[in-house]
Image (tube, rainbow, N blue to C red; front, side, top):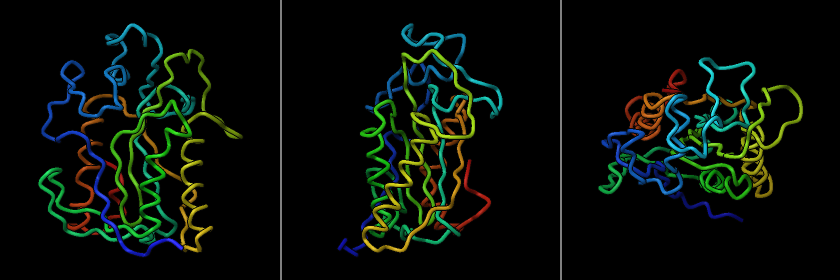
Length: 229
């Protein structure tokens, strides 16, 4: 029987929001994000020859996008009917992260956090970036890094593997399986929101939005119209 003691889950930010984000100046505060990762933000000036011609960025989102291709993806997944299964946001000053609100997680909220961190163990080509669990949804960014991939397989209906849909399906299924096994009431909404991050400005906006999500919840509550930056 899982512990029912709430635990505090903070935003997974690995660098200060005051950092000057630049392809040339990016500091390795996130050990799991290499300089090559940010080559996706430019077509004409890829920073590492090893990755030349491997990143393909479309100007619009996208029928025909290959969701198994190299790219940085912003993800939002909500609980069914936006029920607060994951816990409550509480004020919690932390001088190290400068986060003044965090999730007081339920057992299933902690599993949602743990299982996201476990994604690279099941999909080795995934590198995780910022992530936060909120009372009724999660936000995260992840990088699909397949340096040897050269083909292009547009998104389509039907069975899929080794792409964003399979990653999210596996993650959602693992959280739901834990809930079922431990007799915890829980359900996801069927769909999820995703966006291909195309440039540094978008990345900075997403990063700031995830970082500030707990504080904004305390200020504004559950704003159904404000799930993305």
